[in-house]
Image (cartoon, rainbow, N blue to C red; front, side, top):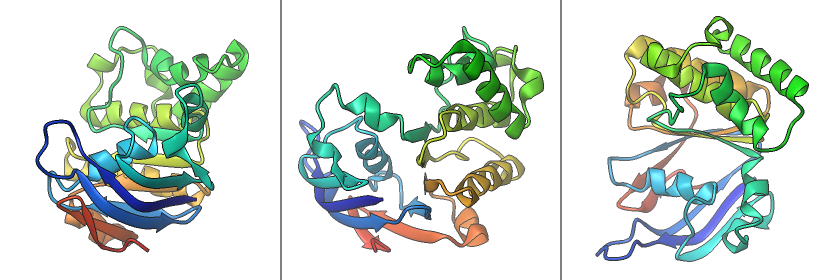
Length: 221
């Protein structure tokens, strides 16, 4: 499903690699924790996977397709198969909860009736259908994160990438979010979660890929 071969990433003006000679493999339907200290390269790796960044060297295959070679016109098609959950939610406060989740389908030109049905179904799944008319600023941090997850799931992606999805939440809300992602994985979706929280890794006992200073030091598979 996801393969990286000798992937490196450098940024202009930086003295060190953000990622250096990364090799790893994630099978279809796997749940993988991506861990390591701050600055290890976790976020950079996730950004490469949904083509927000280009690798400086190496190959990135998703479904046997080298995404490092995609043109700008081809990137939207890739992103239709990938749901992304950001640590800072990235919700649009001038839009309602419903509109935030629907945006993923709107940009794809989905019919309005189908969009309404799918958005309401996924909001019900995350327990927030009753908040569909609310503005994000009126929700708690845990509720906003659940909305971000609903937005990532509404298009039924084959891959979900979550960057520190519990970083701003208390332990109880963190567990809720992780249980939700675990349920998504149980339905067959490949899930990668970047986290530095050892308690979550210990509790869920999934495969762990560890990064240090931009290099895979454990679990590249």
